[in-house]
Every structure is written in structure tokens, then in C-alpha cells.
Amino acid sequence: MPLVPSYIKKLKSYKPGKSIAEAKREFESKSFIKLASNENPYGPSPKSIQAIKQARHKIHRYPDATGFELRNSLALKYNLNVNNVILGSGSEGIMSTIMRTFLLKDDELISASNSFIGFKVLANASGCKTHWVPMKSNRYDLKEISNNINDYTKIIYIANPDNPMGTYITRAEFDKFYKSVPARVLIILDEAYFEYAKDFKRYPNSMNYRYDNVITLRTFSKAYGLAGIRVGYGFAHDSLIGNLLKVKAPFEPSLLGQIAANAALKDQLFLEKSIKMNARGIQYLENEFTKIGINFISSSTNFITTIWPTERIASQINQSLLKKGFIVRQLTAFGSPNYIRISIGLEEENYKFIKTIKEVL
Ligand SMILES: Cc1ncc(COP(=O)(O)O)c(C=O)c1O
Image (cartoon, helix red, strand yellow):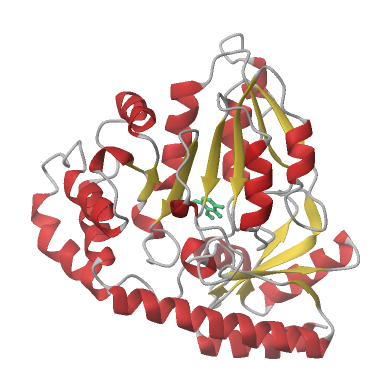
């Protein structure tokens, strides 16, 4: 079809982790435990649910296009000005706005291969040239990313911590890397898993060093338990945010999204419980994997990525787990087909998972 640009024709559509409904259709009405999409197994905060209940009669109205209340809450929490905050339909919504705002046809993007697919899909759909730098020992190779910078580079994307590896770049590594990046290049620091990583000693909380060419992206989809309602946020220099606001779809995030996220921000107890239970789950699974002899990458997130000898073995494990009612994520679409990513579940789900993987092996 002449209508479709060649770079769109070449794209493969984003394949998310299998949903429970999909698995049920495939395996005929069994019950499933989904550990495939790095969601919060403890659900949303009760405060978010309450806020949604109260607001449900208002959904015939458009949301506040400026997202003022939520932006203001975020600005207060992080000691910023409202003009430094942007909202979007998930952090991916903001990534999309960034690309539509800044990219010209000859611009180029750099990131790691085997990193977050959501960014890869958007970058490839932009029609701009992309450089995917292989990871080194399952971590971003910042030196090689620097080596790929040229006169056309416009955007560098770093997921910190990374999905699907679960690893993070340290403050010292980022500081060194930052010095190699020209001021005209925008660095996207995607901190979707910030809440899980923030207490690691060497983790660089990007809020402690605001640079004019860095945008921090965060989300309510992970520790805050609101993946389904699609709210992400970003922090950057006000001129950068001002330009993004001109391009952003006017009414994202939705009315209920803004209200639920604002309520979630006020439920520190729920957030802390989610983080604590996740850390416990990580420790339990990592201990058990070590005992069983499963090779894994130590995680600073809400998932653990395991490494298997071959793609075929990973595929067999994945299928056997599915038959036994567990949805996990083989990382074929991420370019690592012998890797399987397992999201941390409820305590009883984690116990059951270990029992099941032992049977499968
Ligand atoms: C690194 C990373 N960034 C962004 C996202 C998407 O976040 P959102 O739901 O806010 O679009 C994910 C989700 O898995 C992720 O892993």
C-alpha cells in the first residue's frame, strides 16, 4: 500500500506479556497466575479506588487539560516547580510526545539492544535512524553508546534500572557518561522502577542532578499499582516541558487516571508495603533459584530475569509453566530468547511458583 511508509511496513507490532484471558482461551478455563508484566501484585492503593468511586459520576466531563492537581502534587513531593512536570498516558505516552516534539527526519537515536521494547517500537516508528548498542554482561554499555554519538544524534534513551535485565547503571558510571554527551543531545532517563531501586547505595537518583538536557520519566504503573489506568510523569527543564506541552495529546491522562494517581501519591503506607513485600519476594526467589541452580541476573526491580542454556530449553520451560498455570515472559521479542523474566507475585504465588518450577525441571 503506497500510503504506508516503508519503515512502518517493516515494524512488528508490540507483543505484551500474555494476559490471563488469552491464556485461558488457549488452555481452556484453567486458573492462571500472571507473573509476566511487572505489575504490582498487591493491586492499587485503596485510596485510589476510593477516589475513583467518588469521581465516577464526573466522567462525562473532560479531564483538566493542564493536569494541574497531579502536577502540583508531584512538584511539591519532589521540590520542583509545576512547570518542570509533565504527565502522559503512561511514561510511554510521554516518550511518544518527546519523539513527536523533537525529532526531525535526519535525527538519530541511540539506546541498548535488548532493553525496553516500548521505546524500541516508538523509535522505529519515528522513521529516524536508530543505533542499538549491544549490552555488556546484561548491562548498558555506556562507553559504546558514547562512541555511537555523531552530529545527527538527538536522543539517547537509558532505562535505569533496565527492563528486562533488572540491572542499573551507577551514579559514577552515569557521571562519566554524561560528560561525553554534547549538550544538544537529549538524554531520556527512564526510571519506571525507581521506587524499587532508590535505596541501592550506588543507584543515581536523577532528581539529585538536574541537567538541562535530561528528562526523567517515571510511572504510576509499577510500585503505585495503576498500570491499567495509564499515568506516567516526567521532570525536566521548563523550556523542554513547555515545548512538550504544546505537542502532547491535550487530555491525557484520563480524568480517572489523574484522580487515582493523585490519591496514590498520598498513600505512603501502601507504597512502602509494596516496596517491602517486593524486596522480600526478590530475596526469596533469588535464594531459591540459587539453591535449585537456576541462573539469574540480580535484580533492582520487581522482576527477576533468568538465563537458560538455549532458546529451546527456555521455550520448553515457558510452555510447561503455562500448562501448570503460570504466565511468565520468555524474552524472544526483546532479542534474548534464552532468557525468561519472572515478575514478583504475592507471597503465596512466589511459593507456588518455586514448587512448580521444581516440578517442571
Ligand atoms: C523501563 C520501562 N519503562 C516504561 C514502562 C512503561 O510504563 P508505563 O506503563 O508508564 O507506560 C515499562 C513497563 O514495563 C518499563 O519497563
